[in-house]
Image 1: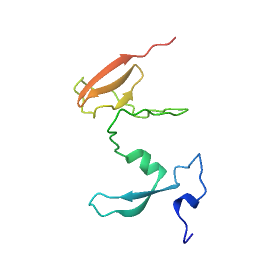
Image 2 (image 1 turned 180 degrees about the vertical axis):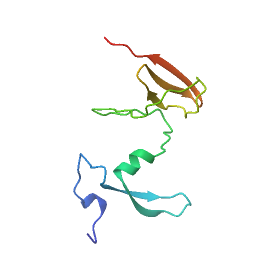
Image 3 (image 1 turned 135 degrees about the vertical axis):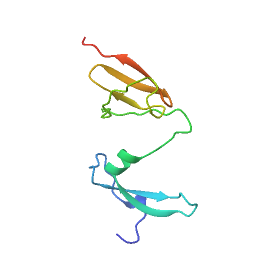
Length: 104
């Protein structure tokens, strides 16, 4: 694969969890080229949008299943989680609101 630029590579629309993504990491001011699996990227990415962002997807699955003991449960703003009775959203750091779930 020598002498190819990224735009010359074939594109895909449905990556597998063990596929690799190319990352230019610049934490120290000196960029380095690295790879990360799709699974590690999705499970560990800490991306803070500078502007309001939206997610467009056919399916959104929230696997964070827990029941906080109080409304001041330790959670980062924007965290969404659930149990069998409620959906919880941290509206600010360590400030959780909940809404009851019901059949319809």
